[in-house]
Amino acid sequence: MMSPEVNILQAFVYLLPIFSALACILVLYKSEQVGEKLADKKVLTLLFFYLLCFVFIWGGTFFYVFYPQWFIVFSSVHYLSYVVLQVVFYHITFTITHLESDKFSYWHYVPPFVLAITLLVCSFFIPFEKQLEVVNSRGGIVEGYEAFSTLANSRHLVRAVYSVVYLALGIYRFWRYRKEVDNISADEEKASLNWMYLFLGLSFILLILPFMVVFIPRQTLMDSLTLYVPICLIVIQQVVLCYYTTTGQYVLLYTTEENDEGQETGIQEVYNIADLNRQKFERYIYSNKPYLKHDLKITDITAPLQTNRTYLSTFINRNYGMNFSHFINTCRLNELEELLEKTSNRKYDNLDLILRAGFGSYNSYLRAKKRQQEKQMLKVE
Image (cartoon, rainbow, N blue to C red; front, side):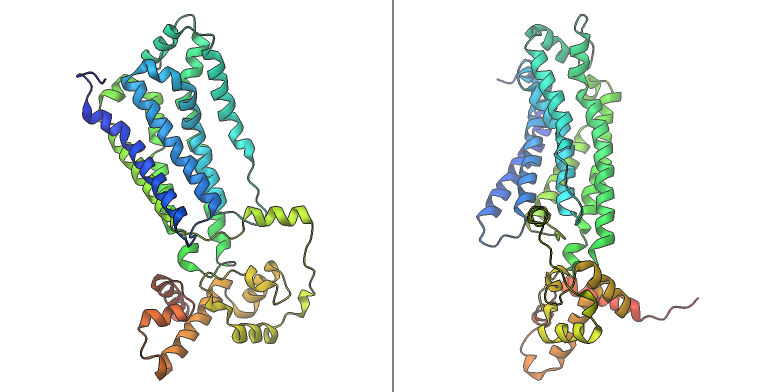
């Protein structure tokens, strides 16, 4: 039972990320029960483990602060969760921003597991009283057990390094994705990944947390209100990631399953891509109207046109002076104009016609219209 000296507010704040993570896990479970699958299953699986890490991290932190004797039992699990969280974060970012030639290396997970297992094995040879002394030292070194103390206390420094490295890798992948996406997907709203700016921004701010633990005495940190702000930001970050991933607010340009299947079979379509010309291309586009599919990707039309993605993307850029996304949305805007001109469509409201023209939402239409207007504006040097 919690002692009267324990600050109830402080305890609640430490438990807040756990409550938030469990609530998000419940949302994940509910989203799996819905008939229409909005999110990629692999992304949701990684998100589950990401949230589970928070449960172990802050559960362990709670015991570390209030019940050190129980923290010893979960010390290796806390170490693993605390460090591997950054790898899972990167794995989620990698999956969402996956490009054709990319393949995630599971070697990223090896160092955190090695460190956690090493700590677990060492703990079997260290007396319980000495382990408790290491915990109560709040980052200090226990005489005679210097190596174990250093290993047990290294989690914050390792986490700080991992936070910097994997945030940098995540930002790099997001930058590469933004460069490539307009040549592959015509779903501008989801492909923009605007919410990722908020998520990465929060991650950048939260870099301060592991460094605070490294450079500020832990007892001082625990006794102050300094941790309250980053903990609240962690909750916001969890909610942002959970909402936008469960609602499928992203476009997977390539799935790892598709890449693996192609590599295993070794089968590739061979086309005479030189046969593609404007007449053939426009006949297909205006006859079949593939742009009416709101989540159209360039790979959806390569087979009917007997070409490949790279050639088709270059063909559109050279012949029409725009990328794939801009071209498809121009077709949708033209389609919308035709729908608006028909008297038979006056019974529909504007949003219905926007959706019938192939836009996934009103925001997608606004993005396309704004881009068209910017292209038509005269420039003065």
